Image (cartoon, rainbow, N blue to C red):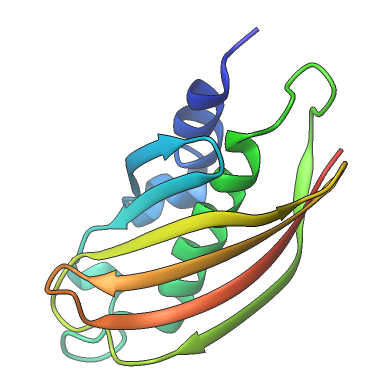
Length: 135
């Protein structure tokens, strides 16, 4: 059976959409995960502004990884996002974005995660609350 970090790296951040976006694992700890969205033209809307949908995908991926980072792989074999609220704070412009996700409440099957997204220069770009169900 794979370990939790292998699941986070291969199945979550290595998923087809995350791979298409170029997402990269920064760190994996129990209930805390960092994921990077490298800047490139394909994730922009106009000029050097990163598309909000790419940022939301970064958030969802990071929260999913955080939820799985503390999961019992023998008891929980699937999961899904059941709630996602994003507040965009500033444009992500011309730089990598990093999502820092942490579980703030872990129940038997429901995890609530906070995700902060910042640019490589420290500019806060977004903050999100994500609810994830493990099953």
